[in-house]
Amino acid sequence: MKRTLKLLLAFMLAAQALQGQQLVDGIAVVVGKEVILRSEIEQHMRNFLMQNRIDPQKNPEMVERIRVRTINTLVEQKLLKEQAAIDTITVDPEYVDQKVNERIQYLIQRVGSEEQLEKAFRSPMKKIRKDTRRVLEEQLLVEKVRQSRFQNIKVSRREVEQFYNQYRDSLPRLKESVDISHILKVVKPSAEAQARAYQKIDSIKALLDAGADFAKLAEAESDDPASAVRGGDLGLIGRGEFVPEFETAAFALNDGEISGIVQTQFGFHIIQMMERRGEKIHTRHILIRVAPTAEDEKRTVDELMAIRRKALEDSSFEELAVEYSDDENVKQDRGHLGVFEIDKLVVPQFKTVLEGMKPGEISMPFKTDFGYHIVKLNRHIAARPMSLEEDWQKIEQMAKNFKLEKEYRQWIDDLKKQIPIENRLDS
Image (tube, rainbow, N blue to C red; front, top):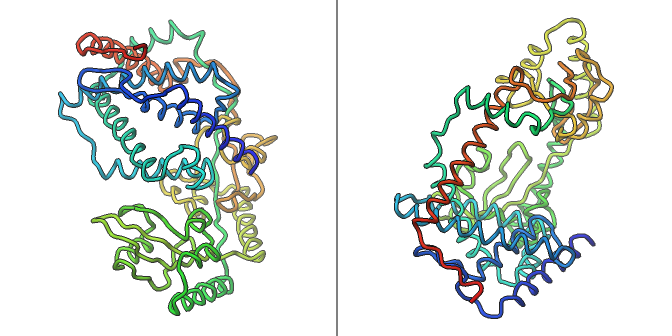
């Protein structure tokens, strides 16, 4: 909490400092028919500072470097926006709306609430959303122009070899890695746990039927913490973004209508339709999760122990994974998770369990946020430099990215010669 407050104050000071440098808004740079406003530069900088948790009071030199980089980036964006008009390239407004919602939610999570976000940006949410939409729409348009120009770029075998021979000494070393497979068992609540959760959601439904305030009940009772603080509000979401059971029930509602009790993999829900906009709906919900008991967890561990014994008795780990694992990808990957650098294992429990294991060994059951696992160490790969023989695909992708960036920079230089640019920052 103290860290969040400290960062929020830093962002507010950043906004004041940036505004202090800009006494009057106006045009900073003209790129063809496009203009870059001074306020646009400051907004991009505020976004960057907030997302990267940079305190401008402690890093004034970094802020100035960010300013220069921001201006250069915006000039490039305007050049590509001019090119988009020439090529008649556009972006889907609904896709832009989706990205705006994602960005706003991300920013709210960074600072804690809508109110704190408004303080950090010194603007109401309506303006923050409008400005964010303008920024993201332009970024998505620019990316589409770039993709259309370079989507067919390829590198030959000779180009990959030349890239490797020229840059082999500066290529990153591959860190110590592991090749692993797993079997996951999700803890399934007992009938008694299901009954307790249903009784609770049923009592909440009775209160709603008697006229209780949906938002207040969601805030007090819902087991979805992200939406509970907003009175259960899930925002505007389109088809395909909910689990099927939730989506079917939600899209069947009329404005203001409250659903019956809906069961999904997350628990029991009550849904209220706030507003429908074509194929998008604005809903809120109350969720009561079905909490497994200690007995449910013990039963799951016992199941995994039995599966482990079968694997140690020469049963195929892959076949056991297909038969028993609750991992939704098991039919495609047969329990194989892949090769990972040990330092980059996302789930910390995996790193702890794999320490000291030898190739071919199978761990004891362990718990993560996904459930209980047993993991098999297929291979241990020592740290080493990249080689064409063993890492062709990685080096090929690096060579392709290098070629793409080189051609992109050349294209930007050509556009700068074709499209007039007027810098008014010093005027």
